Length: 289
Image (cartoon, rainbow, N blue to C red):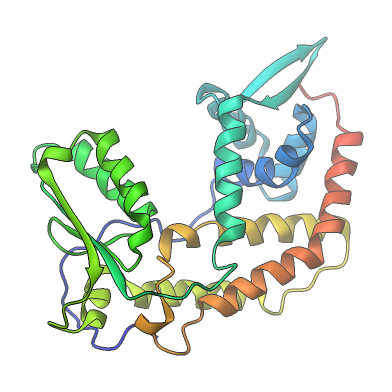
């Protein structure tokens, strides 16, 4: 349920990437993070094409995803005779390590809230749309929400250093003010939460996740591989969607913790068979270049 006191009208919120259609590139990144990153070994083109084929991706789209990832500096290609194998670049490895850490640590532990907030007031002219987009994206990823134009909040004063780094990197120190501390008791904090974060949509996304994976069971190795990739691919959105607010600011039946438990249990159940299928793909990679 959304926080108490939510209203139909509220100030514009930061744009968030809600789980939707699955692209070949996003599936490729999930496969790389789940199976290539841990092994640190080059992978033949054929193995990656077959992996994506099992996930319903056509060969043309899979090759385009590989090419795009190479262009963006995430993958490096190495020709061995007529065949090509792919390795993660240092940049690609760092990106996937950070993403993996964020995915698997999200909601892993419950923290006690000390009642303190971090509040940020920042002014960026409407004409600087690219800068505004970067700021919105970075602050949203840091767990902040915007209850009013130019105002950002998060009930976690410990994020001050992270947010300070974002402001510094974007060069907007001189148009920003910030402070930390408890609420002064003026107004209802749950009204702030309802205005800053789209909790109804986040709750709905959790419901879809539980509905998709709650009763899903698989038997064979390929089925486990497909299920694990789909599981991780669906869960990877939540660290950006859900600010992981303290329980004191949420309804008692907020579905996030139960969804997190489901994610870890399903992953543990499927991983061994999924890994076996991946090793099968690598061992039997065809001659596609």
